[in-house]
Image (cartoon, rainbow, N blue to C red):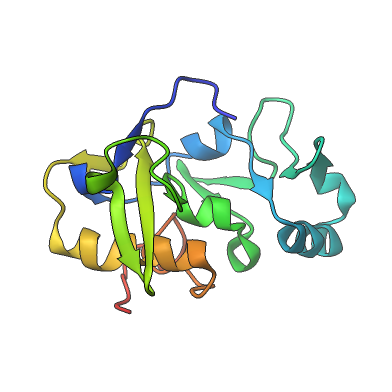
Length: 171
């Protein structure tokens, strides 16, 4: 859930994106977990690290509202769940959808593995740069987000801040 208003921008209106480790996503949003992610986290760290909603699981937030797995290393915010980071975190600030929920379907459309997807970015992310997409962004980064969302890329290379953030891998 966002603390500020969210506007989603189609990926083709973004020149490039890079995670700068600002930690805003981990402070402003609740992380929804699928059952498998919830099970892995609770088996590793205990059930007290998660909370349940009406029909969802979430990572527990600290009293100040931040994700309980957010670590601050000299002003760089990193996730301490690198080997089991939830998909919602891996693909943030992007939403990968089966339908063009936020409009502008031509600018949001992306074909991956024979499927038409619609990819939007959360405009609250400070790592977005607007303009015509660079080759690296459209051919590597967006493709990785789509592959993670579809479940056939379990390891992130050019997505949210991790030890591999700056070494993009080609698919």
